[in-house]
Amino acid sequence: MLIHGRAAAQVPDFEDLAQKDTSSPEPGTGRGRRHGTSSTEPFDRWFRYPAGFASDYVELLLDRLQLPKSSLVLDPFAGSGVTGTSARRMGHSFYGIEAHPAVAELASLKLLPPPANPTEFLACAKDLVAAADRNSSRLQGNLGSEADLIRRSFEPSVLAKLVAVRELIESGQAQEWSLHAKWSLLSTLRDVAAVRVGWPYQNPSQERKALYSDPLARFLQRAEWISEDLSGLTLREDEPDRRLQAVHGDSTKLRSWQPLAGDLGDGCVSSPPYLNNFDYADATRLEMYFWREVDSWAELCSMIRSKMITATTQQSRVATALAATQKLVKFGDVATKIAGLTKELEKERVSRKRGKEYDRVVPDYFASISDVLTNLAANLRPGAPVVWLIGDSAPYGVFIDTPAIISALAAQVGFTAEQNVILRRRGQRWSKNTTRHTVDLSERLLLMRRN
Ligand SMILES: C[S@@+](CC[C@H](N)C(=O)[O-])C[C@H]1O[C@@H](n2cnc3c(N)ncnc32)[C@H](O)[C@@H]1O
Image (tube, rainbow, N blue to C red; front, side):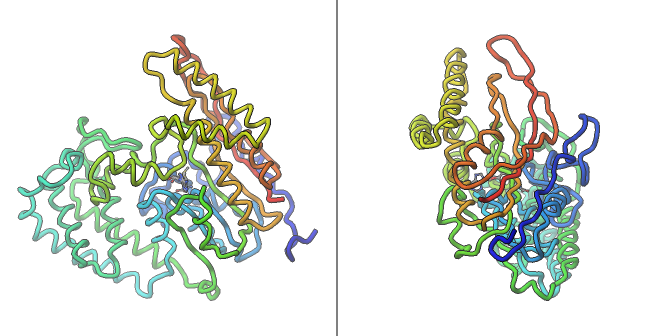
């Protein structure tokens, strides 16, 4: 069959990616997307984003989709751009949308055309280090204007060096390498912090030994990796015609798709936020405060978190949940299913002294996902395959089959669900009333196809 001049690929099979038992490794690195972006793979290692894919896993998925060379791959939840860099390595074009401004900046930086002389960046980083070393003693007694979280996270001598590099970058010393220097510095922070800053949340009240004692040496190491990864990029002959773009935006909104200017995607590999109360904005608080992108918790919430799909109770609002429930009505049976879950969750909430508002998250989450699916359908060519990795969840023991609900919503906005593969099982405990019990949760791969 020919679809828009292209032969329709055979339905790829993902069943063999299912983990046989909890001890057997997943294909690719064996990491799937379980532990965030890799700290060793080129480009992934620029910054370890905890929500990120492992790039070799994405390559494996893209390979299974058998897209013709130079296909346009879409990712409405682009994160740190792992689908983008994988698509580039495989000779494809890419368009991704990411709501977190800093994470979108990182994704977009990774996808810039290869610089003519990437080793210049290393020379620039060395100059920054030499100058920062000279300036840092002046700064050490002068760190009072740094945010409390930042002052509590580092030894003063370490912080003075970090701030000295930041000041040099801000004053333009890194010239065209400013963003590369910025990300080398931001990814150094967790390496040299003297308190617990493990993902997802920073805890400045718990001390730990810094993983690396010399912030300037670590910054240089990170700059070296970036320079190496850029040097490894070969400017392919067809590269100038390839779109490689990650934008800061909200994929529920049509305007975020407008830069595509009518080009239709040939496939999609993505992973939406899970309904698991993981707060992507809070998780990057250390970096946001250090770079002074935000000055307060309220600013972090209004500038970053409020633009993301509601997947945490902290984002939930009564009015938004009600509006979402109304909006979902047109989806018929699946809306009834979501409304039923909402009721159960409300019952659980009110039965607790300080119950969490999962009942307000769920309708909002699925209404937003339906918007993203609608926009994705409008921007994919007929027959295009879509792979989404997504887990189910069970707040207060109420099982929410997120992948099945997403498939049902997708079926009503122009997709056919082809596979729903359990990649791995992850037992999880939730307290229901006063008894604790285990709900068997799983991470799934959804294969859908644009009709
Ligand atoms: C599971 S992560 C995907 C990470 C990505 N696969 C990677 O490798 O880095 C989901 C991402 O969706 C982003 N996000 C949340 N709401 C969004 C929205 N409305 N539009 C675009 N991105 C959004 C989050 O900030 C997060 O980075």
